[in-house]
Amino acid sequence: MRDSFATARSRRRDPRRRYKRTDVSVQRIRHEDVWARVSTVGRTGERTFVLVPGIGVAATYFERLAPALNEFGPVHALDLPGFGGVPHPPHARHMSIPDYAALVGRVIDELGLVDPVVLGHSMGTQVVAELAAQRPELTTIVLLGPVMNRHERRVPIAGLRFAQSSLREPRRVALLAVGAYLLCGPRWFSRVLPEMMHYPIEDTVPRIRASALLIRGEHDRLVPPEWIEELAESMPHARAWEIPGAAHSVMHAHAEEVARLCVEHARAPQPDRDEAELKRYPDAEIDRSEEDAPIADPLGAARGRVTELVGILTDDDSLIAEGKTQHAEATDPAALRDDA
Image (cartoon, rainbow, N blue to C red; front, side):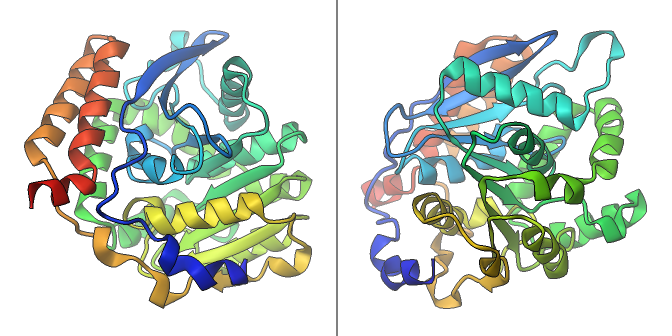
């Protein structure tokens, strides 16, 4: 992995080059009495990626990471029950982390995916860890901002840490979060929160046989360095990295760096235990051009968001796909050069 950065600059995205694909398809996959919304970009490539978001939020959190990963393979980003406008279970049934993991497993099976790279963020790391522990055939997983730190597993402290991390997040992440939490609603959020707070991820990860990549942002107060190292060192095959300048939503402003680490991890041999020590991504290789980069077509991006929201509210997947595609086209960095 260290050698992979020797050519990092040469492999950085050329801003004149468009996203590989911007057209997004949407489908539903059911499991028992619930279903997940799957947003897909791309059809062919070196490796398939499945992206699992955290509590309260939606697949839109991966709006920058998905195109970056799509340079290497198809990407399926999920909206789980209760989040992103997907209905929560009927009859006020709770969903545990294993329940969410079973649904993600169903998605993988229904899509016919063979050994995808399964990536989770925040609570999504718990879901991915649970799935990987149940399915030894999965060979590669990525945990972005794995929660919850067992030394601070109390709601008031977690809330404080989240607030501290949020101060370091890009404004676009805050806007995404507000919209996502409004769709989720406080009632369902408060029902899932205890499941996340009490899930013992530290007991699950030692049972994982997959190659695991753990990533934290430098300013992520929910995931301190000692916690991510503790998790990595307890796993048979793990690597741990820190992204300078990033916070909890590390995959947004630093999508290119996260994607690069994911691809290099998937290509590399299975790590040994001595690779679990936390490494810092080289500061000189951080691409800061996209942190506060202007949106190529702000009106188009806004139209895309509105179209997607109308699709969610009217239960119309074709409108959701249309809105996501409009937004992807409007935010493609290469379009800035076209207008220059």
